[in-house]
Length: 594
Image (cartoon, rainbow, N blue to C red; front, side, top):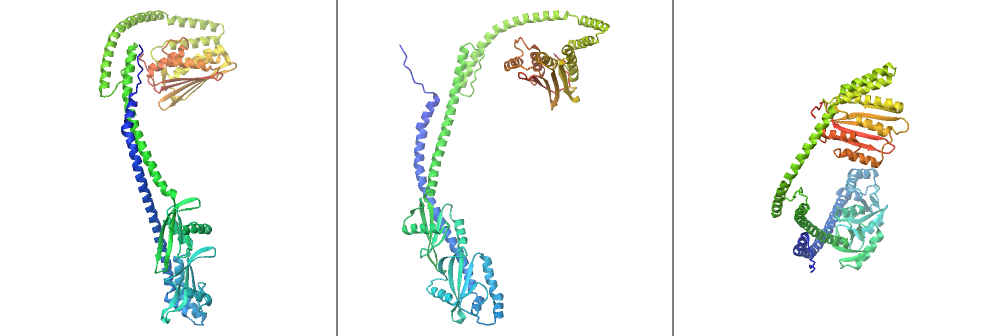
C-alpha cells in the first residue's frame, strides 16, 4: 500500500507566512491610509509656503521702491534744490557756484547710494544751464505738470520705459516752492532700474516660480521671464483667468498665487503680484512623501522579515547540523564533531548525543590503540636493524681509498682528476658530520661550490655558477644541505639536456627578519603537468612519492625545523628554466637538537 505524499513546509517558510498574515498586511493598509492623509497635509503646507513667498516678495519690493522713492523725493524737494530751481539770476558764475556748493553733492550722494538710479528734473526756468540732471524744456515741464494734477499719492507711476538699452520703472512728482505760494518749480522724474528689482524677486521667490508684477492698468512692471513677448503672452492668460487658481501656459499647468501691493502714500494702488508655481512641483512633494512612506514601511517590513528569516534559518541550521552529524555517525564516521551551540533544548539534545558518541568512540579506540602499539614495535625493530647495517660502513676506509686513488692520479700526472677526488672527499666528510642540523650560509655556499666543481669536471664549460650574497648575511644559519639539492636539480633536470651553455644563479638577500634564497637556471624547465606534480609532492612530503626525494626532504626538514614559518616555492615553464624560492626566519644561532 502506497503512502500518501505529504507536502512539507520548512520552518522558515511557516514563520514567514505567519508574519505576512499577522503583521505585514495590516501595516501596509495603515501605511496606505496615512500616506493619503499626509499627502493632503503636505499639499496644504506647500501652498502656505508659496503664499508666504508671494507676500514676502511683495513686501520686499514695496520696501525697496519706498526706500528709493523717499530718498529721491528728499533730494528733489531739498530747499537747496528748490532755491536753485527758483533762481533767475543771469550771472552764470554765481549760478554755477550755487549748483556746485549746494545741489551737486546731493545728487552725487543719491547716485552713490543707488548706482543704477536715473534722475531727471524738468524745469521751465530759462536760467538753469548746468548739469545733465536738469532738463530745461518748458513744453515737457508743462506736460508732466498736467499729468500729475490727478495723482493721488506722492508719485505718479508711469510704467516701464526703455532708455539706452535698459528698462526703467518711471515715477514722477512735483517740486513745489511753498514759500512762494506752493508754485511748481520743477518735476522730479526717477527711473528705477528694472534689473535691480528683478534681483529682489530672484532672492525672495522660490526656484522654478514665475513672478509677474503689473499695475492697475495691467502694464507689466516686473517679471523674471526676461522676455517681453512671453510676458505679454502670460499677461493675456492671467487676464483671461482672473478667478482661476490653475492656469495652463507654455505647455504646463501652474498654480497661481496672488497678492496685492498697496502704498497710498507713494501712489501705488492695485498693483498685482502674481506667482505661477508649476503644479508638478506642488504635487511632487506630496508624491515624494507618499513614496517615501511606502519605501520606509517596505524597508522596515523587509528588515523585520529578514531578521525573522535569519532567526528561523539559524534554528533550522542547528537542527540540520545535528541531523547531519547523526547521519555521518550512522555511516560509520565516529570522529564527526557535534557542532551545536546555544543555551536551549537543541543544545541539550546535541550534548547528550555527543556524550553517547564519545563513549562509543572511546571503546573503539581501545581496540585500535592496541593494534597500533603492536605495529609501532614492529617498525621500531626494523628501523634499529637498518641503522645497525648502515653503521657497519667504516668512513675511514672510504677516505683512505679515495686518498690512495688521488695519489696514484698525481703520480700519473692527472692533477685535474686528483683535484676532483680531493673535493669529493672533503664534501663527503662534511656530509658525514651530523653534529648539527644547521650550518652558516658561507659554509653551505662553499659546499655548493665544491659540488659544482665536481659537476664541471663532467660538463666542462657547458655549465657555469653565479653566486650573489651580501657579506652581511654570510653568518646566517640555514638548514644543512639546503642549497645543494636544488642546485643539483637545476643541473641534472634543467641544464643536462639543454643545447648550449647553461647557467645556475644563486642569490641570497635579507628583508627585515626573513632570509630569501633564490636558485634559478636557464634550463629546459618543465611542463605545467610536471610542475603541478612536483608542487604536490613538495606540499605533501610525508606521503609516499617515488620521485623528487631530495626536494621532498628539504620541504620536510623546513617544516620540522621552523614549525611552518618557512616557505618553499617553485616556478617553471617549458623552455624558460626553473626558479626555487626559499624563505626562512633570519637567525645566527645553530640548531643542534634533532
